[in-house]
Amino acid sequence: MPPIEIKKNIHWVGAVDWNIRNFHGYSTEKGTTYNNFLIMDEKVALFDTVKKPFRSEMLHNVRRIVDPVKIDYLIVNHVEMDHSGSVPEVVEAVKPEKIFCSAKGKEAMIEHFHREDWPYEVVESGDEISLGTRTVTFLETRMLHWPDSMFSYIKEERLLISSDAFGQHWATTERFDDEVDSPELFRHAAKYFANILLPYSALIQKLIATVTDMGLEIDMIACDHGLLWRKNAGKIIEAYDRWSRQEPTKKALIIYDTMWHSTETMAKAIADGLQQTGVSAKLMNLECTHRSDVLTELLDARAMIVGSSTLNNGMLPAVSDILTYIKGLRPKNKIGAAFGSYGWSGEAVKLITKSLEDMKVEVVDPGVRVKYVPDHEGLRPCVELGKKIGAAINESVPG
Ligand code: FEO
Image (tube, rainbow, N blue to C red):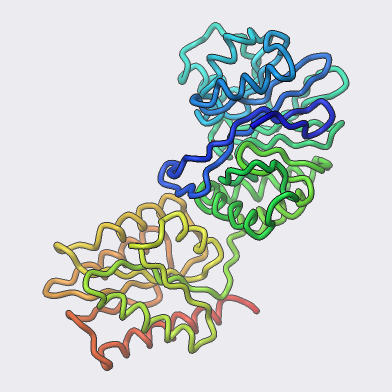
């Protein structure tokens, strides 16, 4: 894909990855992009690189604008390999006068590339460098997404180069938010937030407060993945504020796997009970729902009701997988309970309940078990569980 001038003499020179489908367990069903940016000024600066297999594409894009040896500065906002993987080739081609990064960035660069001799220049929040007519202000954003992460803000352009923040995994030939379907764009952004940034919600709240206090004027956010925000920069910041508050809506997820459909029948009865209380319920069968899509739905749900048949004195592997995944992402403000069918031992409900407690989900019921196949009477406790959780949601969620 050719370079695109995103502002006068500022160019996107990245790469589109149409084929990636798995990003560390996140289902990138529509691919992604690795965005990096070239600013042509008295000093020429390249902001980040791209994943290693795309290095030639990226350098080709750079060469369409400038001979790489004319680049003075390389700015490394983030050392994760989807952005730094081409740094060795870029350093070789560019021979930069300086490589700007955070202190943690320098450590991580050395630990990735084992080159202490590169011309690092460590910067911290508030530091500025002049490119001539433009100024780059750095803002450290530790843990968004790694300890080394930082933003670069160009005040003369009201441009925030935001590294991973505000990204989406979506491969397109379009580069701006106003060129694509907006609901789909926000769905990808929510999925990205839920699966990558959710554990750092408290830091995001602080960051939004800092950006507000600094009075940064932003009319374009150039993120490192997906579409850049020029029409909806304010809206995506508002969405990050809302998502990072983790304020739930009147919604419950019923997340389950089932062996011979008994647990599935229970799931439907629980949904029936929830529906009777006016709460929105979503059934998420793990055989056909990817874990990262469960997280997207969990972002604004109040309840997670998790079900599994008992298998070999434990739970089904897909249920174990989703509980491990959710635990790592540390969602807040959730209530929950477990359910499942069994044949003789029936440990799954107890194990799921323990897992919910371990991740600080408020367990509102000891859970429901059914032996083998539930009949009409056997489903009554499931309907009651749905009603109980629905009532708890209605009590705790305003509106
Ligand atoms: Fe897109 Fe944390 O890397």
